[in-house]
Figure 1: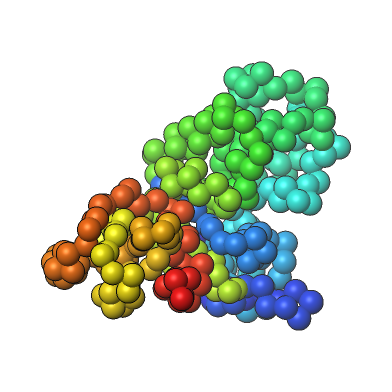
Figure 2 (figure 1 turned 90 degrees about the horizontal axis):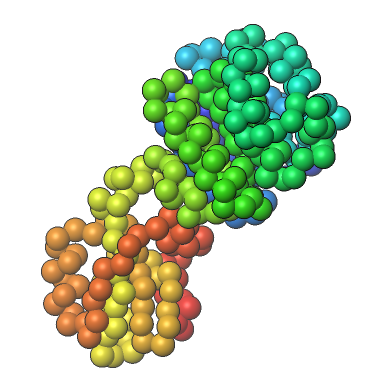
Length: 296
Protein backbone atom coordinates (compact mmCIF):
# COMPACT_ATOMS: atom_id res chain seq x y z
CA UNK A 1 0.00 0.00 0.00
CA UNK A 2 1.09 3.58 -0.70
CA UNK A 3 0.20 6.03 2.06
CA UNK A 4 0.30 9.82 1.75
CA UNK A 5 0.34 11.23 5.28
CA UNK A 6 -0.23 14.92 6.10
CA UNK A 7 1.70 16.08 3.02
CA UNK A 8 2.24 19.86 3.00
CA UNK A 9 4.00 22.17 0.53
CA UNK A 10 4.40 25.94 0.16
CA UNK A 11 5.84 27.59 -2.94
CA UNK A 12 6.98 31.21 -2.66
CA UNK A 13 5.11 31.54 0.65
CA UNK A 14 1.86 30.37 -0.92
CA UNK A 15 0.24 27.29 0.61
CA UNK A 16 -0.32 24.89 -2.31
CA UNK A 17 -1.15 21.65 -0.51
CA UNK A 18 -1.80 21.26 3.19
CA UNK A 19 -2.21 18.20 5.38
CA UNK A 20 -3.14 15.90 2.45
CA UNK A 21 -3.60 12.26 3.45
CA UNK A 22 -4.90 9.21 1.59
CA UNK A 23 -4.14 5.53 0.97
CA UNK A 24 -3.76 3.94 -2.46
CA UNK A 25 -3.74 0.21 -3.14
CA UNK A 26 -2.53 -1.88 -6.11
CA UNK A 27 -5.55 -2.76 -8.23
CA UNK A 28 -7.15 0.67 -7.72
CA UNK A 29 -7.68 3.40 -10.30
CA UNK A 30 -7.93 6.63 -8.32
CA UNK A 31 -8.95 9.91 -9.95
CA UNK A 32 -7.76 13.30 -8.71
CA UNK A 33 -9.92 16.33 -9.52
CA UNK A 34 -9.99 20.00 -8.58
CA UNK A 35 -10.08 23.43 -10.14
CA UNK A 36 -7.16 24.66 -12.22
CA UNK A 37 -4.29 25.77 -10.01
CA UNK A 38 -5.55 23.96 -6.92
CA UNK A 39 -2.33 21.96 -6.58
CA UNK A 40 -2.83 18.62 -8.34
CA UNK A 41 0.52 18.68 -10.16
CA UNK A 42 2.25 20.05 -7.05
CA UNK A 43 0.89 17.08 -5.12
CA UNK A 44 2.34 14.69 -7.71
CA UNK A 45 5.72 16.45 -7.68
CA UNK A 46 5.83 16.38 -3.90
CA UNK A 47 4.85 12.72 -3.76
CA UNK A 48 7.69 11.86 -6.15
CA UNK A 49 10.18 14.18 -4.39
CA UNK A 50 10.67 16.57 -7.29
CA UNK A 51 9.59 19.01 -4.58
CA UNK A 52 10.68 18.41 -1.00
CA UNK A 53 7.69 18.41 1.33
CA UNK A 54 7.54 21.00 4.11
CA UNK A 55 5.80 18.40 6.26
CA UNK A 56 4.36 14.91 5.98
CA UNK A 57 5.58 11.80 4.25
CA UNK A 58 4.89 9.25 1.53
CA UNK A 59 5.27 5.59 2.46
CA UNK A 60 5.20 2.48 0.30
CA UNK A 61 4.67 -0.68 2.34
CA UNK A 62 5.75 1.37 5.37
CA UNK A 63 9.01 2.48 3.70
CA UNK A 64 9.44 6.27 3.79
CA UNK A 65 10.42 7.57 0.34
CA UNK A 66 12.32 10.40 1.98
CA UNK A 67 14.49 8.08 4.06
CA UNK A 68 14.69 5.15 1.63
CA UNK A 69 15.10 6.40 -1.96
CA UNK A 70 15.17 2.82 -3.32
CA UNK A 71 11.44 2.60 -2.57
CA UNK A 72 10.97 5.30 -5.23
CA UNK A 73 11.32 2.57 -7.88
CA UNK A 74 7.80 1.46 -7.08
CA UNK A 75 6.40 4.90 -8.01
CA UNK A 76 6.35 6.22 -11.60
CA UNK A 77 5.61 9.75 -12.82
CA UNK A 78 6.54 11.64 -15.99
CA UNK A 79 6.14 15.38 -15.48
CA UNK A 80 4.79 16.50 -18.85
CA UNK A 81 5.28 20.20 -18.02
CA UNK A 82 9.03 19.84 -17.47
CA UNK A 83 9.80 16.89 -19.67
CA UNK A 84 13.44 15.83 -19.94
CA UNK A 85 12.65 13.25 -22.63
CA UNK A 86 12.46 15.73 -25.51
CA UNK A 87 15.92 15.15 -27.00
CA UNK A 88 15.83 11.36 -26.77
CA UNK A 89 14.85 8.96 -29.51
CA UNK A 90 12.22 6.43 -28.49
CA UNK A 91 14.68 3.53 -28.77
CA UNK A 92 17.02 5.31 -26.32
CA UNK A 93 14.46 5.74 -23.55
CA UNK A 94 14.67 2.19 -22.11
CA UNK A 95 18.40 2.55 -21.40
CA UNK A 96 17.74 5.70 -19.41
CA UNK A 97 14.75 4.40 -17.45
CA UNK A 98 16.43 1.07 -16.70
CA UNK A 99 18.98 2.98 -14.61
CA UNK A 100 16.18 3.93 -12.21
CA UNK A 101 13.70 1.10 -12.67
CA UNK A 102 15.81 -2.04 -12.44
CA UNK A 103 12.91 -4.28 -13.54
CA UNK A 104 12.27 -2.25 -16.70
CA UNK A 105 10.93 -4.61 -19.39
CA UNK A 106 12.73 -3.56 -22.58
CA UNK A 107 11.23 -6.40 -24.61
CA UNK A 108 7.68 -5.38 -23.75
CA UNK A 109 8.54 -1.74 -24.43
CA UNK A 110 9.57 -2.64 -27.99
CA UNK A 111 6.45 -4.79 -28.45
CA UNK A 112 4.18 -1.93 -27.39
CA UNK A 113 5.94 0.52 -29.71
CA UNK A 114 5.33 -1.92 -32.56
CA UNK A 115 1.71 -2.45 -31.51
CA UNK A 116 0.99 1.27 -31.84
CA UNK A 117 3.20 1.72 -34.91
CA UNK A 118 5.68 3.98 -33.14
CA UNK A 119 9.13 4.21 -34.72
CA UNK A 120 12.03 3.79 -32.30
CA UNK A 121 14.13 6.19 -34.39
CA UNK A 122 11.68 9.06 -33.83
CA UNK A 123 12.57 11.79 -31.37
CA UNK A 124 10.15 12.19 -28.50
CA UNK A 125 9.76 15.94 -29.09
CA UNK A 126 8.63 15.40 -32.70
CA UNK A 127 5.68 13.25 -31.70
CA UNK A 128 2.14 14.59 -31.54
CA UNK A 129 0.66 15.30 -28.13
CA UNK A 130 -1.37 12.11 -28.29
CA UNK A 131 1.61 9.96 -29.23
CA UNK A 132 3.70 11.47 -26.42
CA UNK A 133 0.94 10.57 -23.96
CA UNK A 134 0.94 7.04 -25.32
CA UNK A 135 4.73 6.76 -24.98
CA UNK A 136 4.50 8.05 -21.40
CA UNK A 137 2.01 5.29 -20.60
CA UNK A 138 4.15 2.66 -22.32
CA UNK A 139 7.13 3.78 -20.22
CA UNK A 140 4.99 3.61 -17.08
CA UNK A 141 3.77 0.10 -17.80
CA UNK A 142 7.16 -1.28 -18.78
CA UNK A 143 8.88 0.29 -15.76
CA UNK A 144 7.09 -2.37 -13.71
CA UNK A 145 6.49 0.20 -10.98
CA UNK A 146 3.59 -0.73 -8.72
CA UNK A 147 2.14 2.78 -8.48
CA UNK A 148 1.72 4.90 -11.61
CA UNK A 149 0.80 8.60 -11.67
CA UNK A 150 -0.66 10.06 -14.87
CA UNK A 151 -1.14 13.84 -15.01
CA UNK A 152 -3.83 14.86 -17.52
CA UNK A 153 -3.18 11.85 -19.81
CA UNK A 154 -6.32 12.50 -21.90
CA UNK A 155 -5.86 16.24 -22.43
CA UNK A 156 -6.28 17.17 -26.10
CA UNK A 157 -6.21 13.60 -27.39
CA UNK A 158 -8.37 12.16 -30.14
CA UNK A 159 -10.94 9.48 -29.36
CA UNK A 160 -8.83 6.55 -30.59
CA UNK A 161 -5.79 7.41 -28.47
CA UNK A 162 -8.00 8.07 -25.43
CA UNK A 163 -9.64 4.68 -25.81
CA UNK A 164 -6.25 2.98 -26.18
CA UNK A 165 -4.93 4.60 -23.00
CA UNK A 166 -8.06 3.82 -20.98
CA UNK A 167 -8.08 0.22 -22.20
CA UNK A 168 -4.42 -0.30 -21.28
CA UNK A 169 -4.97 1.13 -17.79
CA UNK A 170 -7.94 -1.17 -17.16
CA UNK A 171 -6.01 -4.21 -18.41
CA UNK A 172 -3.07 -3.43 -16.12
CA UNK A 173 -5.11 -3.29 -12.90
CA UNK A 174 -6.94 -6.54 -13.64
CA UNK A 175 -4.35 -8.68 -11.82
CA UNK A 176 -4.23 -6.30 -8.82
CA UNK A 177 -0.45 -5.72 -9.12
CA UNK A 178 -0.54 -2.09 -10.30
CA UNK A 179 -2.43 1.00 -9.20
CA UNK A 180 -3.06 4.26 -11.07
CA UNK A 181 -3.54 7.81 -9.79
CA UNK A 182 -4.91 9.95 -12.63
CA UNK A 183 -5.69 13.66 -12.77
CA UNK A 184 -7.94 14.87 -15.55
CA UNK A 185 -10.12 17.82 -16.53
CA UNK A 186 -12.32 15.31 -18.36
CA UNK A 187 -14.58 14.21 -15.54
CA UNK A 188 -16.57 11.95 -17.85
CA UNK A 189 -13.38 10.03 -18.66
CA UNK A 190 -12.58 9.53 -14.99
CA UNK A 191 -16.19 8.66 -14.23
CA UNK A 192 -16.02 5.54 -16.36
CA UNK A 193 -12.49 4.62 -15.30
CA UNK A 194 -12.02 5.30 -11.58
CA UNK A 195 -12.87 3.26 -8.51
CA UNK A 196 -12.30 6.27 -6.25
CA UNK A 197 -12.02 9.99 -6.80
CA UNK A 198 -10.15 12.47 -4.61
CA UNK A 199 -11.35 16.09 -4.64
CA UNK A 200 -8.64 18.67 -3.91
CA UNK A 201 -10.04 22.02 -2.78
CA UNK A 202 -8.50 25.02 -1.01
CA UNK A 203 -5.14 23.22 -0.66
CA UNK A 204 -6.71 20.28 1.14
CA UNK A 205 -8.28 16.95 0.31
CA UNK A 206 -11.97 17.81 0.62
CA UNK A 207 -13.45 14.42 -0.30
CA UNK A 208 -12.40 10.85 -0.97
CA UNK A 209 -15.24 9.30 -2.94
CA UNK A 210 -15.73 5.58 -3.44
CA UNK A 211 -17.90 5.96 -6.53
CA UNK A 212 -19.81 2.72 -5.99
CA UNK A 213 -20.70 3.75 -2.43
CA UNK A 214 -21.59 7.29 -3.52
CA UNK A 215 -24.00 6.04 -6.16
CA UNK A 216 -25.61 3.74 -3.61
CA UNK A 217 -26.32 6.68 -1.27
CA UNK A 218 -26.54 9.87 -3.34
CA UNK A 219 -29.31 10.87 -5.73
CA UNK A 220 -29.62 13.50 -8.44
CA UNK A 221 -33.20 14.69 -8.77
CA UNK A 222 -35.00 17.12 -11.06
CA UNK A 223 -37.82 19.01 -9.36
CA UNK A 224 -40.52 21.56 -10.09
CA UNK A 225 -42.68 23.07 -7.33
CA UNK A 226 -45.90 25.05 -7.62
CA UNK A 227 -44.52 27.88 -5.51
CA UNK A 228 -41.36 29.85 -6.22
CA UNK A 229 -40.27 29.45 -2.60
CA UNK A 230 -37.67 26.70 -2.22
CA UNK A 231 -38.66 24.19 0.48
CA UNK A 232 -36.40 24.19 3.53
CA UNK A 233 -35.97 20.44 3.13
CA UNK A 234 -33.93 21.02 -0.03
CA UNK A 235 -31.82 23.75 1.55
CA UNK A 236 -31.03 21.49 4.51
CA UNK A 237 -30.26 18.25 2.70
CA UNK A 238 -29.28 18.91 -0.92
CA UNK A 239 -27.05 20.99 -3.14
CA UNK A 240 -28.35 22.88 -6.15
CA UNK A 241 -26.30 22.18 -9.28
CA UNK A 242 -28.52 23.65 -11.98
CA UNK A 243 -31.60 25.86 -12.33
CA UNK A 244 -33.62 26.61 -15.46
CA UNK A 245 -36.72 28.68 -14.87
CA UNK A 246 -38.78 26.71 -12.33
CA UNK A 247 -36.79 23.50 -12.86
CA UNK A 248 -34.29 22.65 -10.13
CA UNK A 249 -31.66 19.93 -10.40
CA UNK A 250 -30.29 18.96 -7.00
CA UNK A 251 -27.98 16.37 -5.49
CA UNK A 252 -28.80 14.71 -2.18
CA UNK A 253 -25.49 13.32 -0.81
CA UNK A 254 -27.32 10.90 1.49
CA UNK A 255 -30.77 10.14 0.13
CA UNK A 256 -32.65 8.00 2.65
CA UNK A 257 -36.15 6.51 2.43
CA UNK A 258 -37.20 9.07 5.04
CA UNK A 259 -36.00 11.94 2.84
CA UNK A 260 -37.78 10.41 -0.13
CA UNK A 261 -41.05 10.33 1.81
CA UNK A 262 -40.62 13.92 3.05
CA UNK A 263 -39.82 15.12 -0.47
CA UNK A 264 -42.88 13.45 -1.98
CA UNK A 265 -45.03 14.90 0.80
CA UNK A 266 -44.20 18.36 -0.59
CA UNK A 267 -46.21 17.39 -3.70
CA UNK A 268 -43.78 18.59 -6.38
CA UNK A 269 -45.21 19.07 -9.85
CA UNK A 270 -42.21 17.13 -11.19
CA UNK A 271 -39.93 14.68 -9.38
CA UNK A 272 -37.56 12.74 -11.62
CA UNK A 273 -34.36 10.90 -10.73
CA UNK A 274 -31.45 11.54 -13.13
CA UNK A 275 -28.16 9.66 -13.59
CA UNK A 276 -25.54 10.91 -11.12
CA UNK A 277 -22.17 11.74 -12.68
CA UNK A 278 -18.76 12.70 -11.34
CA UNK A 279 -19.31 16.17 -12.82
CA UNK A 280 -22.41 16.51 -10.61
CA UNK A 281 -20.34 15.72 -7.51
CA UNK A 282 -17.71 18.22 -8.61
CA UNK A 283 -20.30 20.97 -9.16
CA UNK A 284 -21.95 20.21 -5.83
CA UNK A 285 -18.65 20.73 -4.01
CA UNK A 286 -17.24 23.79 -5.76
CA UNK A 287 -18.24 26.02 -2.86
CA UNK A 288 -19.03 25.74 0.82
CA UNK A 289 -22.63 26.82 0.29
CA UNK A 290 -25.51 24.76 -1.07
CA UNK A 291 -25.95 26.82 -4.22
CA UNK A 292 -29.39 28.14 -3.31
CA UNK A 293 -28.03 31.68 -3.04
CA UNK A 294 -28.17 31.62 -6.86
CA UNK A 295 -31.93 32.00 -6.58
CA UNK A 296 -31.86 35.06 -4.35
